[in-house]
Image (cartoon, rainbow, N blue to C red; front, side, top):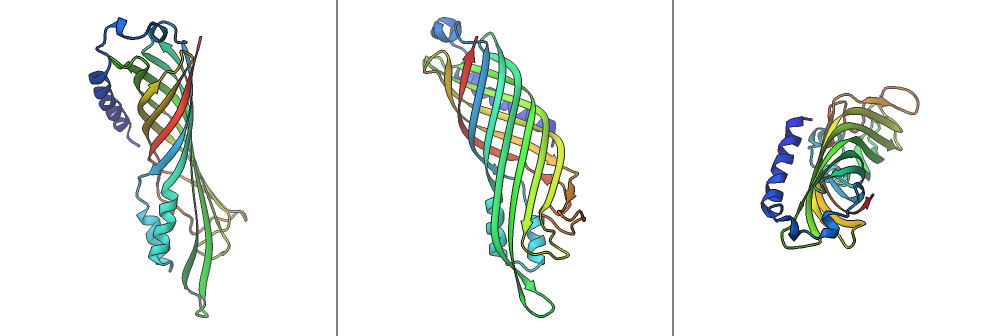
Length: 259
């Protein structure tokens, strides 16, 4: 994961915000928003995530073990799609920017019935596999608001965060072989970062409704892998290579402004 990617995305996100919003004089912003919004901002978001990193190495490994390509492709398409949840707290300053902390969770899973190649007796091996992935993230975050000139209850926002990411991969199969380990668990730690850009609508001075898009960047170079029997598996989803879980997020949420 390269930090300058995140910083570049953040700078680019501020260009449209600055162009569309903050040239308005102070009297064009409603007094109730400019002067009476609480200094503490609590946000809850949920939505969908798409993992854009390539999984071609993992797919080729399954295919080389005898799995048919359409089934493998279907399995990994499931794994690329997930659910996104986040929570953040900010201390706001000048009603335009704030600093705080952000937590997020991405969950994805896939299940498929795969036919592998024949065994020594020329019997086709039918394998049921199930994979769950979790990415937890927490880190300090910087937040900015830009008010629209004419829309009195709307503003744009952006945030950037760099912190700690925790990866967990749970792989289960009903068939044990030199290639598959039953109930395999892979975990890892890495630096990560996120960027969000979205809008806020204020029905009252106490809360806002938000919608936005974001990206999350993290790559896990070292994974700790164990199985239920304590042995080191010969194969698991990830294949012992660095695991890139960078993703795009689309979400809705609410934010509370407290004194």
